[in-house]
Image (cartoon, rainbow, N blue to C red; front, side, top):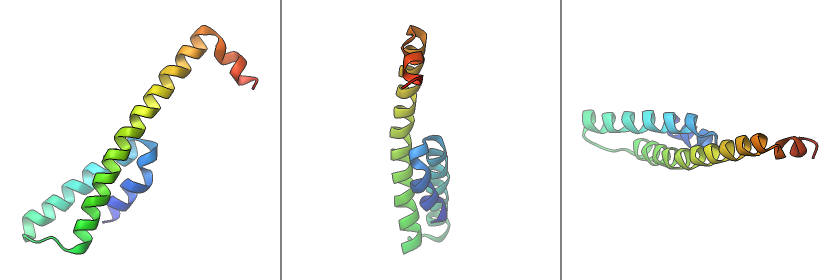
Length: 85
């Protein structure tokens, strides 16, 4: 559950949320495989891990698009005028 909470909390940063979400989801699956049951904490951690994975992927795409736009603006020279903004 802790990894699921951290995944959801750090998902807006992109990669940290994605990594924590994957680890949390794998741990939840391992617990269910070992014990054969899903308790409330495992279910909550699994759901939050999946949310962290989805939002992490969306955030990573957003960060990549942002980086490409910034690189293009600086290459054209428009970035210099934006720095004076």
